[in-house]
Image (cartoon, rainbow over all chains, first blue to last red; front, side, top):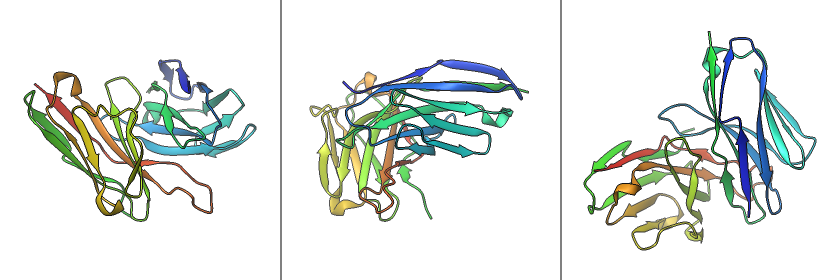
Length: 109
Length: 117
């Protein structure tokens, strides 16, 4: 069964304290792995798509990486406005998209 | 470019009443998804359309939920009758499948927060 597990469930960091969020997955034929940001009361906002192991993508303070079993979302020198829930999702060979439960990130000023 | 539009944003109904949600996807996106998101959880797929065809409705509780996507554009999701456990945020998303770029990411609307009392 296709599955996405995110860790930690919640993370509190001081402003400027870099860290990484983990997304472990098992999937039948990975077509893509997605990272989304979700603010309270809003729909998920698309961040990145990764298609193959070894691929990396960056956007401002965020960098996403992918291996055959997991993906990391690295956050460098975060700011309070980076506080949100970060969701990981995979798309399988049948084009089904499966989400993890997310990591709630809180950056303290 | 307008994003995915959903209405209403909020809905409060009594149990056993019917309710309907509406979604207008991004122009040109042929794939449309309905997800349900419970508090503290990730979105769970209810149904996926490719144009007018429902290609994956395996997670849709068909005894009380129904959906349609007429003309392959707008979509409605209906619950009849609603139960207390249906309280959640219902998200609509769309994507452009089969594009030459290979991009398949889905873009989400703001969601409809349903409260069943």
